[in-house]
Length: 297
Image (tube, rainbow, N blue to C red; front, side):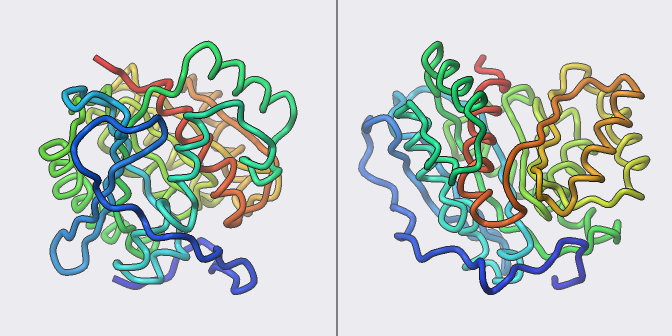
């Protein structure tokens, strides 16, 4: 499916660097902290997903599950290349290695981190190490975020094909409280929609620079209110950055949620709406938040 989106097109001047291929699944056994096992799924003609499983945990241990959705730039590449958005273009595998071997540095955040926040992350990791989560990165279609039928079709794909396969084939707990969804830009808006509409299926719904408009704030507020009514323990987070195209709408949504007594976390971090943010704060913040808030029993 190819359609217009509210998300700005990727600029040729900020294309991600060439990075090594995603490593294949190694032989069974426990690996070093930070090492992962990966596999790429084909789901129908155009469906793809990359599964990322920590290899340092015991083979019989069940972990929380995170669905991570990429942005529009990868959606426009098609399934085979686009599905590598998080594992390769956004350097998620590098981020996993780094959160497993603190202390984190300014370079890990592509320089987009304030000293106080960097210190807080390192203090938190010193108290409790990154335990590990299974991450499934589905290919996100280039849907028009203002056309409900396209959003519903993609939602049905994620909830009807991707999530059931992950719970069946991967070492995950499989409970709603141990399942999160997140995404960046186009993927952030889709994660917000999918997570709020299917609140009973998730324990945490996060977003990174979601591609939402100011005029959509009332609609997202009603979705969040209804989601929290159906799942009182649902964790919610809105994350933007200082130079994010969608900052005004995201902070407006947070203000509206506070006024409606919808408990949530909100972050406004340094950085642009661009690949360096995804490779730095985006990947690390997503990992640390879901590792902290998702249930482990």
